[in-house]
Length: 403
Image 1 (cartoon, rainbow, N blue to C red):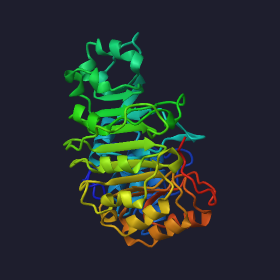
Image 2 (image 1 turned 90 degrees about the vertical axis):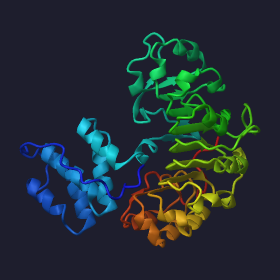
Image 3 (image 1 turned 180 degrees about the vertical axis):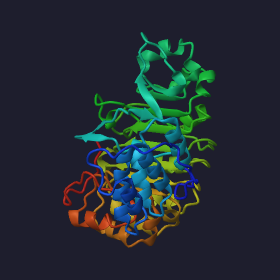
Image 4 (image 1 turned 30 degrees about the horizontal axis):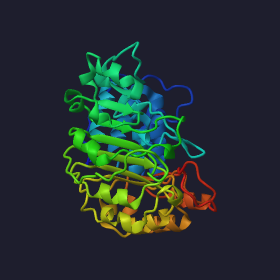
Protein backbone atom coordinates (compact mmCIF):
# COMPACT_ATOMS: atom_id res chain seq x y z
CA UNK A 1 0.00 0.00 0.00
CA UNK A 2 1.56 3.26 -1.04
CA UNK A 3 1.72 6.48 0.90
CA UNK A 4 -0.47 8.35 -1.59
CA UNK A 5 -3.51 6.21 -0.85
CA UNK A 6 -5.61 9.20 0.25
CA UNK A 7 -4.55 11.35 -2.67
CA UNK A 8 -4.61 9.21 -5.81
CA UNK A 9 -3.04 10.55 -8.96
CA UNK A 10 -5.15 12.60 -11.32
CA UNK A 11 -6.34 9.65 -13.32
CA UNK A 12 -7.83 10.36 -16.71
CA UNK A 13 -11.00 8.52 -17.63
CA UNK A 14 -9.84 5.20 -19.02
CA UNK A 15 -12.87 4.21 -21.03
CA UNK A 16 -14.59 6.48 -23.52
CA UNK A 17 -17.41 6.24 -26.00
CA UNK A 18 -21.10 6.89 -25.96
CA UNK A 19 -22.98 5.94 -22.83
CA UNK A 20 -25.54 3.22 -23.58
CA UNK A 21 -29.10 3.54 -22.33
CA UNK A 22 -29.39 2.76 -18.63
CA UNK A 23 -30.22 -0.84 -17.81
CA UNK A 24 -33.39 -1.86 -16.05
CA UNK A 25 -33.28 -0.91 -12.39
CA UNK A 26 -30.93 2.03 -12.89
CA UNK A 27 -31.27 5.04 -10.61
CA UNK A 28 -33.93 7.63 -11.34
CA UNK A 29 -32.37 10.55 -13.16
CA UNK A 30 -30.08 8.52 -15.37
CA UNK A 31 -26.40 9.20 -15.68
CA UNK A 32 -26.95 12.90 -15.05
CA UNK A 33 -28.64 12.04 -11.80
CA UNK A 34 -25.60 10.02 -10.78
CA UNK A 35 -23.32 12.94 -11.64
CA UNK A 36 -25.42 15.31 -9.57
CA UNK A 37 -25.41 13.00 -6.57
CA UNK A 38 -21.64 12.61 -6.81
CA UNK A 39 -21.23 16.31 -5.95
CA UNK A 40 -23.79 16.25 -3.15
CA UNK A 41 -22.26 17.36 0.18
CA UNK A 42 -23.85 14.34 1.90
CA UNK A 43 -21.31 11.50 1.93
CA UNK A 44 -23.92 8.75 2.05
CA UNK A 45 -25.63 10.12 -1.06
CA UNK A 46 -22.30 10.12 -2.89
CA UNK A 47 -21.64 6.54 -1.80
CA UNK A 48 -25.04 5.48 -3.14
CA UNK A 49 -24.33 7.27 -6.41
CA UNK A 50 -21.04 5.43 -6.83
CA UNK A 51 -22.76 2.11 -6.17
CA UNK A 52 -25.30 2.84 -8.90
CA UNK A 53 -22.86 4.25 -11.45
CA UNK A 54 -22.00 0.91 -13.04
CA UNK A 55 -25.57 0.66 -14.28
CA UNK A 56 -24.36 3.00 -17.01
CA UNK A 57 -21.50 0.83 -18.23
CA UNK A 58 -18.54 2.75 -19.74
CA UNK A 59 -19.64 6.21 -18.72
CA UNK A 60 -20.59 5.05 -15.25
CA UNK A 61 -17.26 3.25 -14.92
CA UNK A 62 -15.47 6.51 -15.64
CA UNK A 63 -17.40 8.14 -12.80
CA UNK A 64 -16.41 5.31 -10.44
CA UNK A 65 -12.75 5.79 -11.36
CA UNK A 66 -12.98 9.54 -10.79
CA UNK A 67 -14.51 8.83 -7.38
CA UNK A 68 -11.20 7.27 -6.30
CA UNK A 69 -10.10 10.86 -5.62
CA UNK A 70 -13.24 11.96 -3.80
CA UNK A 71 -12.61 13.94 -0.60
CA UNK A 72 -14.39 11.28 1.46
CA UNK A 73 -12.67 8.02 2.36
CA UNK A 74 -16.02 6.23 2.33
CA UNK A 75 -16.66 7.29 -1.25
CA UNK A 76 -13.16 6.37 -2.36
CA UNK A 77 -13.47 2.95 -0.72
CA UNK A 78 -16.91 2.36 -2.27
CA UNK A 79 -15.42 3.08 -5.68
CA UNK A 80 -12.47 0.81 -5.03
CA UNK A 81 -14.73 -2.03 -3.88
CA UNK A 82 -16.60 -1.93 -7.19
CA UNK A 83 -13.59 -2.25 -9.46
CA UNK A 84 -10.91 -4.01 -7.39
CA UNK A 85 -11.58 -7.40 -9.00
CA UNK A 86 -11.89 -6.21 -12.60
CA UNK A 87 -9.24 -7.46 -14.97
CA UNK A 88 -9.20 -4.89 -17.81
CA UNK A 89 -5.61 -3.63 -18.29
CA UNK A 90 -6.71 0.00 -17.91
CA UNK A 91 -8.43 -0.74 -14.60
CA UNK A 92 -5.48 -2.75 -13.36
CA UNK A 93 -3.21 0.22 -14.07
CA UNK A 94 -5.50 2.52 -12.10
CA UNK A 95 -5.58 0.10 -9.16
CA UNK A 96 -1.84 -0.37 -9.21
CA UNK A 97 -1.36 3.37 -8.87
CA UNK A 98 -4.08 3.68 -6.24
CA UNK A 99 -2.93 0.98 -3.80
CA UNK A 100 -0.12 -1.49 -3.41
CA UNK A 101 -1.98 -3.82 -1.05
CA UNK A 102 -5.67 -4.10 -0.24
CA UNK A 103 -7.42 -5.56 2.77
CA UNK A 104 -10.02 -7.45 0.82
CA UNK A 105 -7.63 -10.21 -0.22
CA UNK A 106 -7.04 -10.72 3.49
CA UNK A 107 -10.59 -10.92 4.88
CA UNK A 108 -12.05 -13.49 2.51
CA UNK A 109 -11.91 -16.10 5.25
CA UNK A 110 -14.35 -18.60 6.71
CA UNK A 111 -13.65 -19.66 10.28
CA UNK A 112 -15.01 -23.05 11.25
CA UNK A 113 -14.61 -24.16 14.88
CA UNK A 114 -11.06 -22.87 15.14
CA UNK A 115 -9.97 -24.16 11.75
CA UNK A 116 -8.59 -21.94 9.04
CA UNK A 117 -10.45 -22.75 5.87
CA UNK A 118 -8.76 -20.23 3.66
CA UNK A 119 -7.48 -21.44 0.32
CA UNK A 120 -6.71 -18.25 -1.54
CA UNK A 121 -7.95 -17.56 -5.02
CA UNK A 122 -5.25 -14.90 -5.33
CA UNK A 123 -1.87 -14.51 -3.72
CA UNK A 124 0.47 -11.63 -4.48
CA UNK A 125 -2.06 -10.48 -7.10
CA UNK A 126 -1.66 -13.75 -8.98
CA UNK A 127 -4.14 -16.54 -9.55
CA UNK A 128 -3.53 -19.51 -7.27
CA UNK A 129 -3.08 -22.89 -8.92
CA UNK A 130 -2.31 -26.22 -7.24
CA UNK A 131 0.76 -27.65 -8.89
CA UNK A 132 -0.08 -30.78 -10.89
CA UNK A 133 2.98 -32.72 -12.12
CA UNK A 134 0.89 -34.09 -14.98
CA UNK A 135 0.18 -30.59 -16.25
CA UNK A 136 3.36 -28.76 -15.27
CA UNK A 137 3.89 -25.02 -15.01
CA UNK A 138 1.67 -22.84 -17.18
CA UNK A 139 2.49 -19.12 -17.28
CA UNK A 140 4.62 -19.50 -14.13
CA UNK A 141 5.26 -15.77 -13.73
CA UNK A 142 1.48 -15.18 -13.63
CA UNK A 143 0.52 -17.93 -11.14
CA UNK A 144 0.99 -18.55 -7.44
CA UNK A 145 1.67 -22.28 -7.21
CA UNK A 146 0.66 -24.49 -4.29
CA UNK A 147 3.19 -27.23 -3.61
CA UNK A 148 3.86 -29.69 -0.78
CA UNK A 149 6.63 -32.05 0.28
CA UNK A 150 5.75 -34.68 -2.33
CA UNK A 151 5.83 -32.14 -5.18
CA UNK A 152 9.29 -30.73 -4.63
CA UNK A 153 11.38 -33.11 -6.73
CA UNK A 154 9.10 -32.90 -9.78
CA UNK A 155 8.58 -29.18 -9.32
CA UNK A 156 12.34 -28.53 -9.41
CA UNK A 157 12.67 -30.41 -12.71
CA UNK A 158 10.31 -28.01 -14.48
CA UNK A 159 12.03 -26.06 -17.24
CA UNK A 160 10.33 -22.81 -16.24
CA UNK A 161 10.59 -23.20 -12.48
CA UNK A 162 12.91 -20.21 -12.16
CA UNK A 163 10.10 -17.99 -13.50
CA UNK A 164 7.85 -18.61 -10.47
CA UNK A 165 7.53 -15.52 -8.26
CA UNK A 166 4.79 -16.59 -5.81
CA UNK A 167 4.82 -19.87 -3.92
CA UNK A 168 2.40 -21.43 -1.42
CA UNK A 169 4.20 -24.22 0.43
CA UNK A 170 2.05 -26.47 2.60
CA UNK A 171 4.85 -28.79 3.64
CA UNK A 172 6.76 -29.17 6.89
CA UNK A 173 10.49 -28.97 6.33
CA UNK A 174 12.85 -26.09 5.58
CA UNK A 175 12.07 -25.27 1.98
CA UNK A 176 15.15 -23.09 1.58
CA UNK A 177 17.41 -26.10 2.08
CA UNK A 178 16.19 -27.76 -1.12
CA UNK A 179 15.53 -24.84 -3.47
CA UNK A 180 18.52 -23.79 -5.59
CA UNK A 181 19.59 -20.15 -5.59
CA UNK A 182 18.38 -19.43 -9.13
CA UNK A 183 14.84 -20.17 -7.91
CA UNK A 184 15.12 -18.59 -4.48
CA UNK A 185 16.27 -15.23 -5.84
CA UNK A 186 13.18 -14.98 -8.02
CA UNK A 187 10.63 -15.68 -5.25
CA UNK A 188 8.88 -12.48 -4.18
CA UNK A 189 5.93 -13.92 -2.24
CA UNK A 190 5.91 -16.96 0.02
CA UNK A 191 3.25 -18.70 2.11
CA UNK A 192 4.42 -21.26 4.66
CA UNK A 193 2.12 -23.50 6.72
CA UNK A 194 -1.20 -25.42 6.73
CA UNK A 195 -3.26 -24.34 3.78
CA UNK A 196 -6.58 -26.15 3.99
CA UNK A 197 -9.12 -27.65 6.35
CA UNK A 198 -7.12 -30.86 6.81
CA UNK A 199 -5.16 -29.20 9.61
CA UNK A 200 -5.93 -27.28 12.74
CA UNK A 201 -3.74 -24.23 13.04
CA UNK A 202 -2.13 -25.54 16.22
CA UNK A 203 -0.91 -28.74 14.60
CA UNK A 204 2.10 -27.24 12.82
CA UNK A 205 4.90 -25.03 14.08
CA UNK A 206 5.60 -21.57 12.71
CA UNK A 207 8.76 -21.58 10.66
CA UNK A 208 11.66 -19.40 11.77
CA UNK A 209 10.98 -16.06 10.07
CA UNK A 210 14.54 -14.85 10.31
CA UNK A 211 15.88 -17.91 8.47
CA UNK A 212 13.26 -17.50 5.75
CA UNK A 213 14.18 -13.85 5.23
CA UNK A 214 17.88 -14.66 5.19
CA UNK A 215 17.30 -17.35 2.56
CA UNK A 216 14.97 -15.30 0.33
CA UNK A 217 16.61 -11.88 -0.09
CA UNK A 218 14.09 -10.57 -2.65
CA UNK A 219 10.90 -11.45 -0.77
CA UNK A 220 8.28 -8.71 -0.75
CA UNK A 221 5.53 -10.69 0.97
CA UNK A 222 5.78 -13.40 3.63
CA UNK A 223 2.80 -15.15 5.21
CA UNK A 224 3.46 -17.85 7.81
CA UNK A 225 0.78 -19.89 9.55
CA UNK A 226 1.01 -22.29 12.46
CA UNK A 227 0.90 -22.81 16.21
CA UNK A 228 3.13 -22.37 19.23
CA UNK A 229 5.91 -24.87 19.99
CA UNK A 230 4.16 -26.04 23.15
CA UNK A 231 1.46 -27.65 21.03
CA UNK A 232 3.33 -28.53 17.85
CA UNK A 233 6.28 -30.43 16.58
CA UNK A 234 9.11 -28.76 14.74
CA UNK A 235 12.28 -26.78 15.20
CA UNK A 236 12.01 -23.92 17.67
CA UNK A 237 13.26 -20.40 17.03
CA UNK A 238 16.35 -20.91 19.16
CA UNK A 239 18.59 -19.90 16.24
CA UNK A 240 16.60 -16.76 15.45
CA UNK A 241 18.87 -14.06 14.09
CA UNK A 242 18.16 -10.37 14.01
CA UNK A 243 18.73 -9.13 10.48
CA UNK A 244 17.93 -6.42 7.97
CA UNK A 245 15.82 -7.22 4.92
CA UNK A 246 15.57 -4.48 2.32
CA UNK A 247 12.57 -5.59 0.26
CA UNK A 248 9.91 -7.08 2.53
CA UNK A 249 6.68 -5.06 2.30
CA UNK A 250 4.18 -7.47 3.82
CA UNK A 251 4.66 -9.66 6.91
CA UNK A 252 1.72 -11.75 8.14
CA UNK A 253 1.91 -14.23 11.03
CA UNK A 254 -1.29 -16.24 11.45
CA UNK A 255 -1.40 -18.27 14.64
CA UNK A 256 -3.72 -19.40 17.38
CA UNK A 257 -1.13 -18.35 19.94
CA UNK A 258 1.83 -16.04 19.33
CA UNK A 259 4.23 -15.97 22.27
CA UNK A 260 5.85 -12.82 23.60
CA UNK A 261 9.31 -14.16 22.74
CA UNK A 262 8.37 -14.52 19.09
CA UNK A 263 6.86 -11.04 19.04
CA UNK A 264 10.12 -9.67 20.44
CA UNK A 265 12.08 -11.53 17.79
CA UNK A 266 9.86 -10.21 15.00
CA UNK A 267 10.17 -6.66 16.29
CA UNK A 268 13.95 -6.98 16.36
CA UNK A 269 14.02 -7.32 12.56
CA UNK A 270 15.04 -4.30 10.50
CA UNK A 271 12.45 -4.01 7.74
CA UNK A 272 12.76 -0.54 6.16
CA UNK A 273 10.30 -1.30 3.33
CA UNK A 274 7.56 -2.83 5.52
CA UNK A 275 4.11 -1.44 4.76
CA UNK A 276 1.83 -4.20 6.08
CA UNK A 277 2.32 -5.83 9.48
CA UNK A 278 -0.24 -8.38 10.64
CA UNK A 279 0.09 -10.44 13.80
CA UNK A 280 -2.51 -12.93 15.03
CA UNK A 281 -1.99 -12.88 18.79
CA UNK A 282 -4.22 -15.78 19.80
CA UNK A 283 -5.11 -17.48 23.03
CA UNK A 284 -2.97 -17.96 26.12
CA UNK A 285 -4.01 -21.64 26.14
CA UNK A 286 -2.18 -22.07 22.83
CA UNK A 287 0.94 -20.07 23.57
CA UNK A 288 -0.43 -16.56 23.08
CA UNK A 289 1.05 -15.25 26.33
CA UNK A 290 1.73 -11.70 25.15
CA UNK A 291 0.39 -8.49 26.64
CA UNK A 292 0.08 -4.90 25.53
CA UNK A 293 3.60 -4.21 26.80
CA UNK A 294 5.05 -6.56 24.18
CA UNK A 295 3.49 -4.50 21.37
CA UNK A 296 4.55 -1.05 22.55
CA UNK A 297 7.55 -0.75 20.17
CA UNK A 298 5.10 -0.82 17.24
CA UNK A 299 3.00 2.07 18.50
CA UNK A 300 5.77 4.67 18.48
CA UNK A 301 5.73 4.73 14.68
CA UNK A 302 9.54 4.69 14.64
CA UNK A 303 10.04 0.95 14.25
CA UNK A 304 8.52 0.53 10.77
CA UNK A 305 8.36 4.01 9.30
CA UNK A 306 6.53 3.07 6.08
CA UNK A 307 3.78 1.13 7.82
CA UNK A 308 0.30 1.86 6.44
CA UNK A 309 -1.51 -1.34 7.50
CA UNK A 310 -1.40 -2.45 11.12
CA UNK A 311 -3.24 -5.66 11.94
CA UNK A 312 -3.25 -6.88 15.54
CA UNK A 313 -5.84 -9.56 14.99
CA UNK A 314 -7.30 -12.51 16.86
CA UNK A 315 -6.47 -11.02 20.26
CA UNK A 316 -7.80 -11.63 23.75
CA UNK A 317 -6.89 -8.08 24.80
CA UNK A 318 -8.24 -6.01 21.90
CA UNK A 319 -9.62 -3.28 24.20
CA UNK A 320 -6.13 -2.65 25.57
CA UNK A 321 -4.79 -2.48 22.03
CA UNK A 322 -7.46 0.07 21.10
CA UNK A 323 -6.48 2.27 24.06
CA UNK A 324 -2.77 2.07 23.25
CA UNK A 325 -3.23 2.82 19.56
CA UNK A 326 -5.60 5.73 20.18
CA UNK A 327 -2.92 7.36 22.32
CA UNK A 328 0.05 6.59 20.08
CA UNK A 329 1.82 8.28 17.16
CA UNK A 330 1.21 5.32 14.82
CA UNK A 331 -2.50 6.16 14.49
CA UNK A 332 -1.49 9.30 12.62
CA UNK A 333 0.42 7.47 9.90
CA UNK A 334 -1.39 4.19 9.19
CA UNK A 335 -4.29 3.98 6.75
CA UNK A 336 -5.73 0.60 7.81
CA UNK A 337 -6.27 -0.49 11.39
CA UNK A 338 -7.28 -4.14 11.65
CA UNK A 339 -8.42 -5.41 15.07
CA UNK A 340 -10.64 -8.14 13.64
CA UNK A 341 -11.17 -11.66 14.98
CA UNK A 342 -10.50 -10.47 18.54
CA UNK A 343 -12.60 -9.65 21.57
CA UNK A 344 -13.00 -5.90 21.07
CA UNK A 345 -15.99 -4.70 23.10
CA UNK A 346 -18.02 -1.51 23.10
CA UNK A 347 -15.56 -0.09 25.62
CA UNK A 348 -12.66 -0.44 23.19
CA UNK A 349 -14.76 0.82 20.29
CA UNK A 350 -15.73 3.88 22.33
CA UNK A 351 -12.03 4.74 22.70
CA UNK A 352 -11.64 4.57 18.92
CA UNK A 353 -14.73 6.70 18.35
CA UNK A 354 -13.31 9.39 20.63
CA UNK A 355 -9.96 9.45 18.85
CA UNK A 356 -9.98 12.17 16.14
CA UNK A 357 -7.15 10.49 14.20
CA UNK A 358 -9.36 7.46 13.52
CA UNK A 359 -11.17 9.62 10.97
CA UNK A 360 -7.94 9.80 8.98
CA UNK A 361 -7.98 6.04 8.38
CA UNK A 362 -9.24 4.51 5.17
CA UNK A 363 -10.34 1.20 6.73
CA UNK A 364 -11.19 0.17 10.27
CA UNK A 365 -11.62 -3.61 10.31
CA UNK A 366 -13.53 -4.93 13.34
CA UNK A 367 -14.78 -8.12 11.70
CA UNK A 368 -15.93 -10.81 14.16
CA UNK A 369 -15.61 -8.65 17.26
CA UNK A 370 -17.80 -8.50 20.40
CA UNK A 371 -19.77 -5.35 19.62
CA UNK A 372 -23.42 -4.47 20.11
CA UNK A 373 -25.59 -3.42 17.20
CA UNK A 374 -25.90 0.03 18.76
CA UNK A 375 -22.14 0.47 18.69
CA UNK A 376 -21.98 -0.72 15.10
CA UNK A 377 -24.48 1.96 14.11
CA UNK A 378 -22.32 4.61 15.77
CA UNK A 379 -19.17 3.33 14.09
CA UNK A 380 -20.83 3.51 10.69
CA UNK A 381 -21.13 7.28 11.13
CA UNK A 382 -17.35 7.62 10.84
CA UNK A 383 -16.04 8.82 7.48
CA UNK A 384 -14.10 5.57 7.28
CA UNK A 385 -14.82 2.20 5.72
CA UNK A 386 -15.81 0.26 8.85
CA UNK A 387 -16.00 -3.53 8.52
CA UNK A 388 -18.20 -5.14 11.17
CA UNK A 389 -19.52 -8.20 9.34
CA UNK A 390 -20.05 -11.18 11.64
CA UNK A 391 -20.20 -10.25 15.31
CA UNK A 392 -19.76 -12.47 18.32
CA UNK A 393 -22.20 -12.09 21.19
CA UNK A 394 -20.99 -9.15 23.34
CA UNK A 395 -20.79 -11.56 26.27
CA UNK A 396 -18.51 -14.02 24.44
CA UNK A 397 -15.06 -12.51 24.96
CA UNK A 398 -12.74 -14.78 23.02
CA UNK A 399 -10.50 -14.66 19.98
CA UNK A 400 -11.75 -16.38 16.85
CA UNK A 401 -8.85 -18.72 16.09
CA UNK A 402 -6.93 -20.74 18.65
CA UNK A 403 -6.96 -24.51 18.25
